Length: 292
Image (cartoon, rainbow, N blue to C red):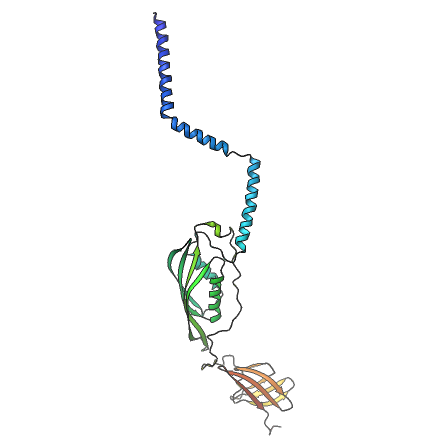
C-alpha cells in the first residue's frame, strides 16, 4: 500500500470519527434542547396570525373594553387597584379646600388590613367645625366614587368666639374611615371620574334654640331698645337711640338683632322684630303725643 492511499484512508477514518462524535453529541446531549425548540416552533406556528386578523381582533377587544369601562363607570362605587395610602390625604385636601378657617381636621393613618377579597387603609379623623361642613365631610367620604366607609363617628357640641366676640356654635368630632382597594384592576374603569360631592345646607341639630350669648353690635346698627320715634316721612322713619344718634330707616331695613317690619302712618307707629338669642320679640315705637 503506497503512502498516498494510506493518507487517504487516514483522512477518511478521521472524517468518520468526527461525524460519529458529532452525531453522538447532537443526539445524546442536545436531544432535549432540540425537542424543546421543536415544541416552541410548533407553538409559534400554531399562534401565528395574519396581520389583518390581529387588527380585527384588536378592534373587537377595544370595543369590549369600552363597554366594560362604561359599565364600571356607571356604578356608584368602584374599588381601585393598588392605591397609595397618601391618596386619601389628597382627597381630603380637595374636600376641605373651601371650608371656613374655624373648621380644623386632623388625619392619622391607623393600619392596612385585608377584608375578604379586598384590602383597606384605615384612618382616624378628629377636629371641630361647623355642623354643615362636618355633614359635607361625611357625605364626601361616604359618596366618593372610590369606595370609602366611615365605621365609627362621635359628635359633640362646643362654643368658640371669634375675634369680634361673636359666639360660634361648632361641633367636635372623631371618626374612623376605611379606604378600600384591590390587587385586581377589574373593579374600576381605566379613567377615574369622581361623583358629585356637592351638598346643600341642612338644619344644624347642634345649634341652640335659646342662647345666652348675644352678638355685639359691630356694624353700628340702630339699637331699638330705649329708642324714640321722632318723625314719619314718606321715605321712612326718623328714630333716635339712647345715645342721641338719629337714624333714617325704612321697611325691611336691618337693625341690631332684627328688622323694621312695618311703618303704620295711620297709627303713627313703627314695628320691629328682634331675635334675642332665640327669643323672638316684637317692639313697637309710637310718636310722642306731645309732638303730634
